Length: 312
Image 1 (cartoon, one colour):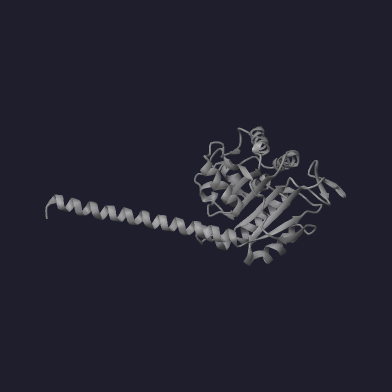
Image 2 (image 1 turned 180 degrees about the vertical axis):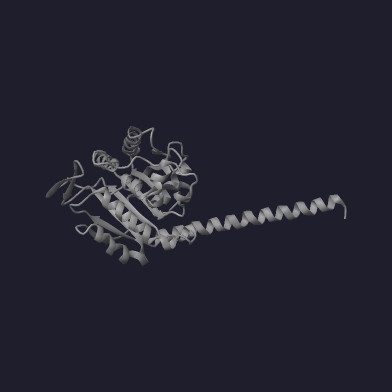
């Protein structure tokens, strides 16, 4: 056998190995995506009727519970981890607010009983709904969870504009978290109250595989973030409508808020959808509507940071 023949044979073998590896990767990717879609279709939804007690600390404690509940999932593949969904939705077709009961909460935030134009939802895997339901009410005994169909925020002939949240710096660096005098989510809530048309905030949540404590050498900032359990998150906003003028205004208001709260001493959140093509936007809307977790859009936050972004 000549050297030329040997080189050709080795080239064919190498090509075959590379082709086989690519095929396995492709099939695995398809399988994982299918399982993520199936997982999303097996969600049970609850509408949250809120009570008087609303503090970020309550949500942070509930997130800590979800993480401890999920620790036995950590050795499974990523698509096997259970999914939790939180949503806040402003609907355009609601009537005027009817404040039958009103209480001041969280330095000026108001809670109303009676009809509200902003709704809150929680979703979990069907097999886990009783466990999640029972424990949710331990954290918020004056709340009520009403099982409902998956909310559909689109009506016929509507389009949508989207905004997804990313981190400005490496995820190991913490964002500025809530304080009694400064609450980012309350400001998001105020934008929803003033918004024109419909706007929805969505959090897809899974306990993360990644341990910040493994980073060597750990900086003070990393230690600060590693003190509390972390989550893999997809965080997005969607504003649907037939006329997208209002939708764009709603998202611009959120963009301005994220810019206003930027702090050079911390990590910051920002809009990662400014330069998306229509195809990317369609994919974002599909994943948003069907609550499909996209690992490529993953944001890692600890429980305190998550409570800063979203709390009940």
